[in-house]
Length: 219
Image (cartoon, rainbow, N blue to C red; front, side, top):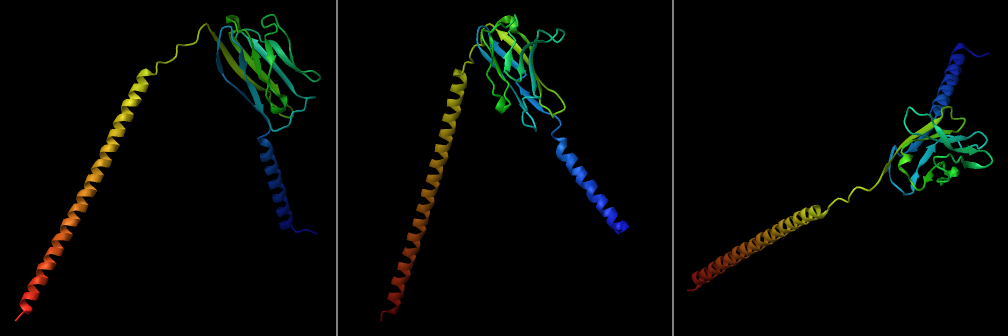
């Protein structure tokens, strides 16, 4: 028969085990959907609209669901233009707006749900949403992308001034370093000359003292 102290100890251990289990599972109750929130596309070009997701669970195609939707503004309804089918995988719905211009280019094995949109038009401006659900993740993930269409790319930045400034600064630094090296060499050379002069002067004194001593020793 166990004592009250043993029962309390067992209860504490059981509670600790349950808490650790809950903590370990707490990070696996939702997913993250990764997208570029703003994309600028050139009119008439083909662009990639990326969408990937991270999940604590491996994808189960019998439970996985995904939809791409489009809306012109936040006040408009969302129109689905691509969805996931258990047998067919990612299936474009060919709405009138996009026709056959939308293509799936992702990789389900890598949690990549990206698409391309070809022959981009001004009418394609709007909000694209990537909706993902991967049970047993409880919360549906969603990525929101604002697509903007421009008629021309911004002019390239003139780097001539930057190059000139960089060259001037680089030249000034090179001259400064060279000057420091020359000054250091001159100081070292001067120091060596002083040491040589002091050494010669010391040797001259010793020679004089030696001659004087020899003169005192003669009868």
